[in-house]
Image 1 (cartoon, rainbow, N blue to C red):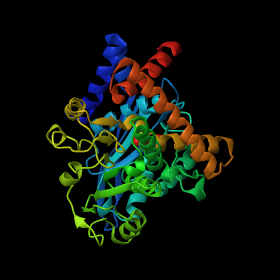
Image 2 (cartoon, rainbow, N blue to C red):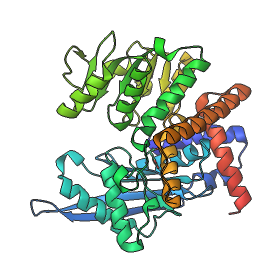
Image 3 (cartoon, protein in one colour):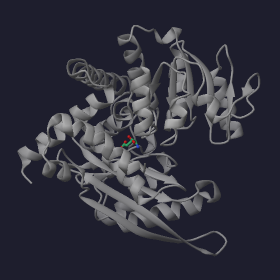
Amino acid sequence: MSSYESACYYFDRAARLLDLSDNMRKLLLTPERELKVQVATDLDNGQIATLIGFRVQHNSARGPMKGGLRYHHEVDGEEVLSLATLMTWKTAIVNIPYGGAKGGIALDARSLSHGELERITRKFVDEIQDIIGPDKDIPAPDMGTNAEVMAWIMKQYEKYHGFNPACVTGKPLELHGAEGREEATGRGVVTLTVEFLKRLHTDVRDSTFAIQGFGNVGSHAANRLFELGAKIVAVTDALGGVGKEDGLDIPELMNYCSENGSVKGFPGTHPINNEELLTAEVDVLMPAALGNVLTAEIANHVRAKYIVEAANNPTEPRADEIFNERGIIVLPDVLANAGGVTVSYFEWVQNRQHFKWELGRVRKELDRILLDSIEKVWQIATSKKVSLRVACYLLGIGRVGRATVLGGV
Ligand code: GLU
């Protein structure tokens, strides 16, 4: 099943429960705009590279569209569309005043120099600058992009439209970025995980974790879990993985990883591969990297009690059904990783007001929004006797649907 079919599958399940008409389903699923552009640039060796960039604006019923920009060799139009759709539900679930969008460029960042990446980013902004903006569509970091890429976006946008830092979020602190944005997705994942476990009568400090991915989300989540006293027994990244029964020292692992470019070979650990990580006997499995890693085949072998989806779209629908049948409880992506876009919202608010918040305020407001959201989702899941994923979709689709009806088509 393709990533877009997965996104539609989850939508349809909730739409049936909401009794949405076929016309309304079609309206809510159809993206408002899908843009595919040529991104041609000179490489350092004098050759010309012609890349393809995408921006999909899925839905703006609740406000300007919001979502990250992904640099990865597997990016294609369909994946970007499914991720844009997820953003629409995600912003609605945490009730921030946005719609959903996503962008991406198919490239292998590791084979490009810093200068090449900057030229590619600026060229992409040249192509999309008229459809993005603080009141239209606000990009942010996603897989393969970071604060520096956001700074290039802001500066290139400025050439056309003048100073307007709210046109992009996830910027460096020195360039109108927000305190706490970089840690936000990982930290938010943990805030919700602690609450999720508490509601299942489990203490995070007595729990073991296996985390797939040690990028921005995985490393910050691991670090926060470590601070709270949880035991992280396995971590993998794109180049390899490490395991340790009595728990990894995460601050040390972060240092090791920034020096060596991977967790692979971290002293005092044994090597593990991705399949071993996904099927490890732990309390919580946390996919924090790519999509579609939990296939039906793997799902039958998963031994974790709980799954927290820090990544976007990590679980195929058939795997999700298997987890439901096997009693493995899933905290779904559209809620679990919503901390990132929530602090992006705070950054946008600060940029528009030209007023900077302190880190304590960012964390406090983030906790409030996430805990309110999990409470609402929990109430729906309990009263309607549905999974947390279906409850999230009921909440998100319900809000987008009502905004659509109230606003008129
Ligand atoms: N890329 C992140 C996500 O998937 C953050 C998006 C944003 O901050 O706008 O939620």
